Image (cartoon, rainbow, N blue to C red; front, top):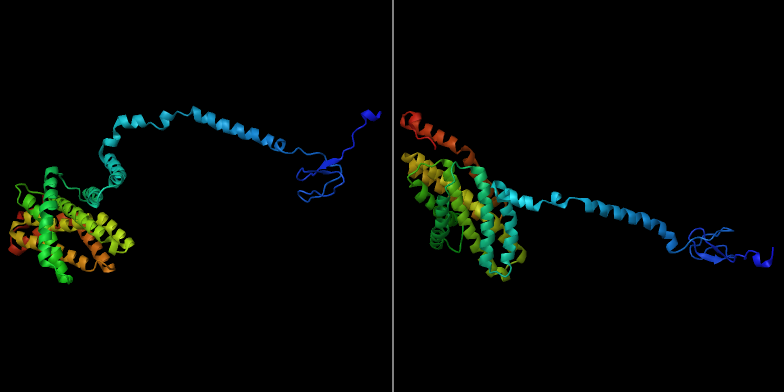
Length: 354
């Protein structure tokens, strides 16, 4: 063999572990520290080592893209069909949609608005939610929207004014249990009961006890929404002097629960006004008892609201409201029997709840 065709002596070999090149005389790889085996063959470096893995990855991506392109998007997301069939405008679905969308709209309205506008928006929102909840619980046999509107407007305008005027004359800086009952509870429960007396009790139609309960709760919702707004404005003015976390927590609590609390109290009073309508011979005693019962519960809660006892009284108030909803007719029947036995008349002749 001529020298021109003789193989060129190899002066470089590659690490079998990491592929780094080294002079043939080196026994250890300077890159990874592993021993270099004699006669190690050259190893592909750089992009050549990763090139085989790129092809499967690209193929998988292309496969997914192709599958996505074949999906029927209008079938999977039929927005136009949903809009056209109108299910979102009907019954419980419409209520759910309105309740879910309203907070986002209120948030946009609230940006840049004054505290009064913001408070009214969120207070009415929570009052409407409680309206739906109370209606679901009570299930009155009729839903007289003009009557409900009259009661809500009267309570929000005249009722609140009456309560505020009485409280200014009956309360003092030194509040105690008696002051909370007679100076706060009694005026507010009287103000909420007044439209029930005027528009239902003095009306020309006999109404069911559930109707009295529900319309009374609506009066309370209107009163509570208005009260929550007034407290919100007061908190906003006093915010520089209050602990911010406590003020914000109290404000949120007011907006969420004020309308419910007053709805339960007014519903209890309205129930007794309804009993008075069914038992006219006992009307003064029944209405007086119902008003006093609600006023005492209200005053007890206000006096102990800062502690766990106040929480327990709030639970008692809600529990009592639910109790009258579910056992109102039974109470009326038992009252009829009691009246008949006391007067010696036939219980079947006593008025029956409508």
